[in-house]
Image (tube, rainbow, N blue to C red; front, side, top):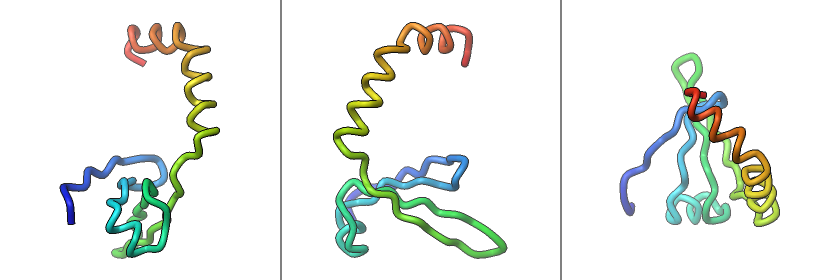
Amino acid sequence: MSGLLMPTKTDRGWAVQMLPEMAADAGVADGSIVVLHFQAGGVTAEILPPATEEMKQEVREIADKFKDLFAELKRRGD
């Protein structure tokens, strides 16, 4: 296994970027994310595919359109 996995807590569970070896073992696309859900002493997981180029472009456009608002929110402490 190559490197340390850094999970991120989200409102859906704990998200972990899958290593290429993990994605290959699971038969999913490189860049996929596994979301772990802890419940009643157990764990379930879902695998989210990587964002498409179209999705990434839309996010860039939104970020650019609202960059002044985001800067003000950051200045105020979100």
